[in-house]
Structures are given as C-alpha cells and as structure tokens.
Amino acid sequence: MSLTKRTLAECDAILTAPGMPYEVETRIVDGRVQRVYKHLPRSIRDFWQLYGAQHREQTYVVYEDLRLTYGEAYDGSLHVARIFERVYGVRKGDRVAICSRNLPEYLVAFWACHLIGAVSVMVNAWLPFKPLTYCLEQSASRLVIVDAERADVISPVVPHLRKTGVAGFLVWGSASLRREWDGLKLWSDVMHLRNQSLELLYPPQTDAVTIEPEDDATIFFTSGTTGLPKGVLSTQRQFLTNILNAKIGSSRAILRSGIDLPTDPTGPQKSVLISVPFFHVSGTTSLTMLATSMGMKIVLMRKWDVTKENVRIAGGVPAIVADLLDSPLEGHPFETLIFGGSPAHDRLPRKARMSWPTANMSQTYGLTEANSISVSITGEDYEARPTSTGIPSVVNDILIIRDGMAVPRGQEGEIWLRGPNIMKCYWKDPEATARALTADGWLKTGDLGLIDKEGFLYIRDRIKDLINRGGEKIDSISVENAIHADDRIYQVAAVGVPDPRLGELVAAVVSVKPGFRGQVKEEEVINMVRGNLPHYAVPVMVIVLNNSFELTPSHKIRKEPLRALARQEWERRSRGPPHTMARL
Image: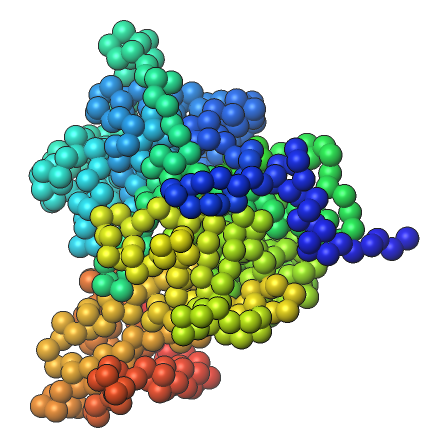
C-alpha cells in the first residue's frame, strides 16, 4: 500500500500543534515580536541539568582511552564550576575563553561555564598568533583555558592579557606535559581540590543565580571585512533555538514520506563522530547539543576509526563526507550523513547514496551569526533537490533582497534571515552590528540566493569576497594583506578555486611593480605568507602578472576576470602532471 505524501504546510501544522516539541508561541523579545519555541529550555544550565540526569548511566564522550558517562561529565562540570566560581571569581555574565582542539575536558569546561551563568568564549584554536591573541584580548575574559599547543602560543603575552582582567590561565594536561609556561597553571594542578575541600572552603553557588532566556550565553568568532575575527554574542534563547532547528528537518522528512512520527524514539544508543571543532557553531551549537539532547555517544578522534566505536552518524562540512567516500568504509552501517557549513556539490550526495544506500542524508544552511541552522533539507526532498539547502525552520523567516526590495520567488538577491536564533550583536562592535542587523531584526547574510516556487532555498554565490574552504570562511582581505607584505607586489586579489572535496581552495593573483617584473616567484610568495596565515588560508596557487589589474569605475579591483583566470589556470594544472600542482 502506497503512503500519501504530506505537503510542507501539513507537516508544519502537525509539528507545531499544541503539546508537540516544536510548538510555537509569539513573544516580545528585545522589543520585537518573534515566533519562539514554547518548550525550549530556559537556559543552557537547565538543558544540561535535564539531559545530564536523564542519560546519566550512558556513555557520553569517548576520546582515545578515556570514556566518560553523562553522569561523570555532569558531576565533573559541577566540580569545575565551583572552582571557576570560588577560586577564580567567575560570576554570572563573566566570560571564560576556551582555545583548544576537541578534547573531553573542553565539553566539561563548557558545561561548567553555564552552570554558573558565565559566557563561554570559543576562540578558534587554528588562528595564528596575532588574531588569536586579539580574540583573547577583545573578549576581556575572567579565565582563559588552552591546550598545550595554544599555551606555547600565548605564553609570551600572558602579562599583557592579565591587564585586560584575566584572573587565571589553565592548560589542559597532566604533569607529564609540564613546560616552562610563565603565568599558566596546569588544569590537573588546580582540579586536585576535591569536592570535600570545596564544600568547606568554597560553598557551592551554582543554583544561586537566576539565568533568563535573554541573558548572554556564548561568543563564537567569525571573520570580518577588516580581516580580524569578530565576536558573535548570543543569548541563551538564541543559542538553544538551534536544538530544535537541528531536529526539525528529520521530523519533516518522516512526515513528508507519509509516515507518522515515532511515539517511542528509545532504542540502542547511537554514536556520532564529531570531527568539526567545538569552536565552530556546527561543532557545538549543532552536533554537540543535538547529540546531548538525544543521549548519543560523542566520539572524538584525531584519525578515522568509525568502526571501533560503531559510529552511526557523521558529517559536518562536505569535506568530511568526501573523506569517508575515500576511506575503506563502503557498506559501513551509517544511519545519518550531514552536510553543513558549505553547500555540497550535487554529485557528493549521489556518490554517498551509492556507498550507503540506507543512510538518511541532510543539508543545512546557517552561519555563526544565526547560531548555525536556520534552513535544512532531509531525506527524499534532499535527494530530489541536491543543490538546495532546504526550507526555513518554523521560527525562521527568509527574504531575498535586491536593491533594497524583496523580490518574488525565483529571482536572485541577498539572503536575509530573521528569527529567535539570530545573534544579539557583534561583541564590542556596534558599527558592524548596525551593518549586519536591521532595526527589525533581519540579518543580512551576504549570500546570494533564491527561493523556488515550492519554498526551497538555493545558494547561488557569496556576495562577500569570502572563500569557503570546507566550511572555513576565509577573509580575502587578510590573505591580500599578508601578500602585500612583499614590497615588490603592486596589486593582489585573493580568490577561490574549485576543489571536489573542500568546495574551494585559496588562490591569489598578483601584479608586480614595474621595477621588479620577472623577479617574483610563486613559491616565494607562498612561503612568505605561511607564518602569517592559518594553514587553511595559505594560497595553493599564486599567479604572477606583469600588468596592472582592471579596475571598476570606483577604482576597485575587478575580481571576476581574475577569478576566471585563476580557475582556468587551476584546472589546467589539475590536468597536468603532479609536479605542476601547488597544493599544500
């Protein structure tokens, strides 16, 4: 018997019905009328207290030989919260900066921040020295926590950072990792204060503060047009909205197929591989929060080993799925593959379907300023429209704007988003906030797209000159500024060139000053910028020209012909022998 397919409107009516998890109500938030999820936890603390207890006996996180249950992680976060509060004086609204690769301790510290109402500041651990220390300085954090690699980076500026209000610096690791870090303490040296001592010396205060939905919660960092990262400040509600935004796509897909939602979703514990850094919204706001709410086992690893932990859910940026396709995992029983961070090439989901015919696949669209997901597409809808990023959640709205006016469906323009997940502001940057957010709450994404007649969103291009390397959005200005450090260079244009795995790679076209023509070599330019850019922003190719670039009437470099030139040259090199490639 064939099942009757439901329309999108019918699905949303079922999902938002009274008593359903996605039930919506209208509230005045920050002076604006918004649709919000009625049953969303009031705070990140409430969320962790609920699910830490609900899944207490289940495995929570696995990393190498370390395994923590939900209960162990929750108890550990309580202990750490007391130390943050009583030893370092962290209070509600204070900021705690975390700069590290993915570790179990990262999650424990994150939850500890929110048990006391502190703001977690997630600093990109891949940044080079100057922008990394800039983020720490701008955040004015009360406490800074780093891994050993980042301790080596920030050690010289610890005295300066203390002047910004930092009360302490902690380094994850044991005594075996001890180095000469002036002013930094090992995490293990501080955490030896056990609960009995803390109860006597520092009475617990984790339930003494009230945390409201509109209180500040998180700061993630994104690149800006200046080339320096911008802090994205979000409230409890803005951050937590993504929990249901991340789930609604799969619920819609079930209803769209004609099946009713399962009444008892319990079953064997599922494992999710999180290879996306926690300092990205997709790593924490999406994958970690989703996994925690569903009682999943979170698997962290430096190298692929999905079979050992029986991983059933994987994904992130399309490059992760591309890596899986290149690994000997055909036939592995994946249940869900997630594409996010950047649009996947239409061939990628089709290849994934051939390797894992029973896996459910989904694509999401969002950005740091929207706390990850605002739009998603899953299941049969995605397979029928592999170039679409989906439809908005039931609390999000989309406008397509061109020349200051909303355009009809089918026409291209800038994508604007609105909803309870949109950021509060850029941290300490009111001018950038005013450029990005309208008075009535619309976020100007800078992405070019259209909505088709059925309501599905398609991303056509980026209006900004950001290069999207596997979800890592690279500011072209920062690349150009690094190359301009060579006084022989007259003009620079950083552009993206296509890559089947990462979507785009960074390339550059340079014009040489007349007195130095014939003296600048591609390899020299690439080697020069390696120490000043993150590894993912170092150009894989530099085209050296002896003529000046074409300019627009406003005397700006016209990038489109340079982008076409770079892509043509990259394709030529890709067809040539290996030695002609300038890959990292």
